[in-house]
Length: 240
Length: 240
Image 1 (cartoon, rainbow over the protein chains, first blue to last red):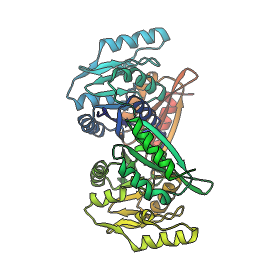
Image 2: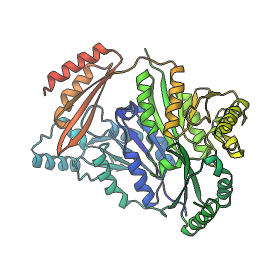
Image 3: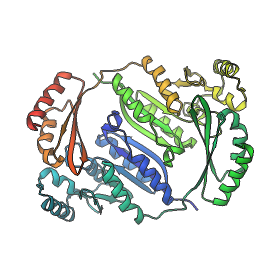
């Protein structure tokens, strides 16, 4: 069985300038792994329309799903919705259902639904809304692209809204063995083990702790029995 | 004056599975900003040769510099050097100067320079080495691609080695004003301000704290006097 695939586009100058450390990529990666959707690629692009449009076109054609974060607020640098419309050659305008959500929210909280805030009701034609239980302004799905906010609490809430609606795959089973020897000492037998289990992904992630080298060996696969078998061999090769 | 541009390729299944949270992107972004090299794009790809080769080809053609992290260790899943050679159609083999560095290191530390560790001396033809003061195994530069380790301490040491050799640009001046009002309340005047300063980048980064909304407005540009002028106007528009 082949799992659905996914890519992510992180949109924002603040990530590329080093001002802000992105946390949405790591969060989404973990959530997708749980439901058996394979995140294959992430691109971080600036608040630049041609760059966003190009990434949306390339990744939506290559993967089952694309998830974006950032650029859907009320300010002049929030251009994601327009870029998504352009990428799929759709019109975009304030939509009644999105406007109604915002109107109810600001009636309740006492804010003003001004021109700037109405920008957050601009939705490309044919999209469906993604609920935002944190701050109301919705995300949306158009074709296979799921457009979400960059603020982590809102991003996470939108992911929780959208993920149960997607068809997942076989979650990856994963086991880790921590080996307190340098990678160079274990690489030979480890490579042979990987060769005997071509259906599994066997990764070696080195670390350094108190001046000593070691590696975490992670064995991943869809078949739990195969992962168990490979882990038994690994443990026999490198007893604690 | 136009600054040199850059892209980064983060290589590793462990980032895309959510197992490891990447820290090299945020580090490199900050260092490049300091020296006036504009990081325009980051791609995170898996330990998959076609994906790595495609990213190297696309980004090395589009930007002044490309920086990679990950996949240059001694284990079977370390395939970055071979992929760089393939992307530039170069041969790759163990190189005497890289082997000599490793031989001296293992003679000193008592490790064995076995077949696996010798993989770390495989360098594409025509590359120059990047010193690794942490654990010796070198990175390398081929054409405009700088290939570095994924372990953060080693990555940072290699960045410190390579950055002073590159021609930087005009470092961006940056000023930030924290405004304790929702983005929707400030977006109108803020957009007009941005329109009056098309030479500057004016970004709005919303936050939520103790249930209240606010935004950090960041004004960036190469001309400090222009940044000052825009910041004066912004402060007048939204007094504390």
